[in-house]
Image (cartoon, rainbow, N blue to C red; front, top):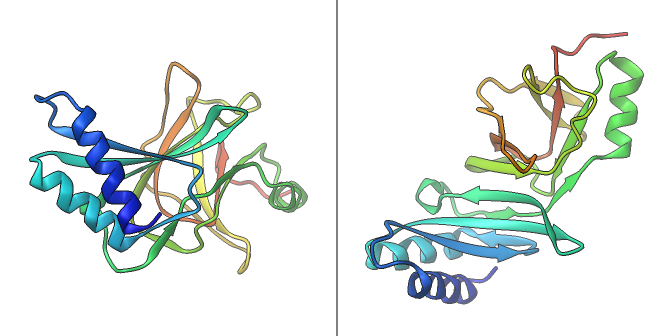
Length: 184
């Protein structure tokens, strides 16, 4: 998303917001990426209107939100671009983990490789039917280096609509399971 598009979106959101609202939500759908300049422009326009901005970057499928990234422009560090694509499941990653681990898993694949440059909150409509949702464990997995790291503070919850919410600072893949990974 370009800076011009971002400014237009935040101005529309400000105009539509209640006068008493302290937060303005900027909604974007199925965008491939957003630049640091666009996020800075959103922040600048929102602060000028005395609002705190939050960007909702949705990926939709068949008209329904499949995933949402919650991006707080005030947390942006650096001048890079954030890729906004999210895919639920990845057959290649699932096959690899099934080969080496006993765990049932679910996979969230981000188009972003490496760090987001900030903490990002994500909400995904993930199939968790094989997992104990009261005991979820999250791993950040980099398919290029074939390395994984346990996420220490995913701060997860499942909302009334069945979306899994969690926090991550890394892109690549997130592996969700209900116990520490156990080798076969």
